[in-house]
Image (tube, rainbow, N blue to C red):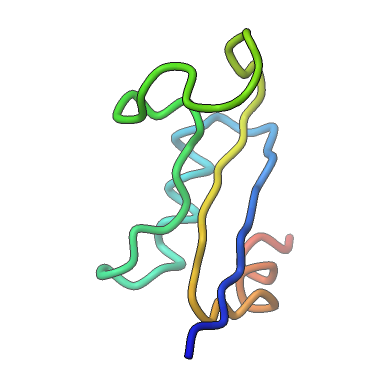
Length: 75
């Protein structure tokens, strides 16, 4: 049985730096979060008539240990 967590991360850091910190949290067989401005995504795949102007990463995960993920970013 799946226990899915849909997650969005908003971050003020440089995109590559942030995503590299997130990526090391996940095992190699899990893709992890994807930046909404990823060039592999089609243009305008989201609602609205403008481009997103924020740093957001999204993902859907089965049995995500949310507390552990939060601790990954704790100072």
